[in-house]
Length: 250
Image (cartoon, rainbow, N blue to C red):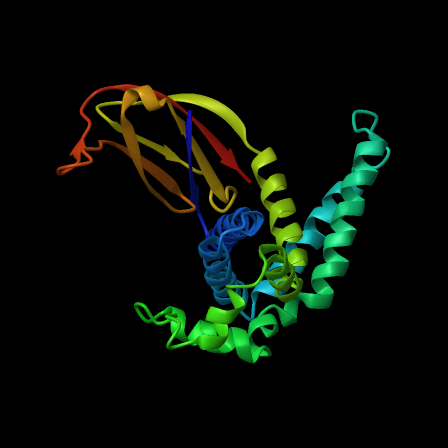
C-alpha cells in the first residue's frame, strides 16, 4: 500500500515538512560520499529555514504539554499499563526539557558559523558551490568521510531535540487514527468532518490500482479525487469506483 498524508492545519504541515527533512538528513549523513554530505548540509539549511519560525517553539512546547496532561489523566485507569504510561510521560518530559533549552537556537547552528553561512549563501545559486567560488568548502570535502560526518553532527546538534519532539508528536497523532475502508464513486470521495476535530488524513491506496489521490480539505470537509497518472502525458481523472483505506487523526 502507498501512504499519502494530508494536513488540515499549518502546524501539522510544518511538522510533516520537518519530519521529511530530518529523515532525509539522517539518511544522507550515514553515507560517506562527498556529494551525500553536500546534500546533508543543504538539507540542514532547509531544516533551519522551516524550523526557524518564531512561533514553532511555543507550538511544540504547547503540544507536548497538552499530551502530558492528557496522559497523566490516565493514571489509575485499570485498562492502561502504568509501565507504558510512565515510559511515554518520560519521553514527553525529555522532549520538553531538551527542546525548551535549544528551541530558540535552532538557526544559530548555521548563522553563528561563518563557514556554513557562506555556504548557505551560495547553494541557491546554480553551480554556486564550485571550487573556485568556495575553496574552503572544496578543501572540506576532501576530508576523511568520518571527519566530515563528525563536523556535521557537531553543527547539527541543536536539531536533535527538534527531531525527537517532532517524531514523538507525529507518532502520537498517527496513533489516534482508526482505519476505515471507503469507496470513491466514479473516482471521487468526500466526507464531512466534525469542525476542528481532525488534524491529519492518511490515505492508503493499493499501487496495483495505478491511481494517485488529489486530496483537499479543511476542518469541515475532505475531498479525494483519484487520478490515473500518465508519467509521459497528461494525467486523467478516474471515472471508476475504487476502494481504499483512510485514517482520520486527531
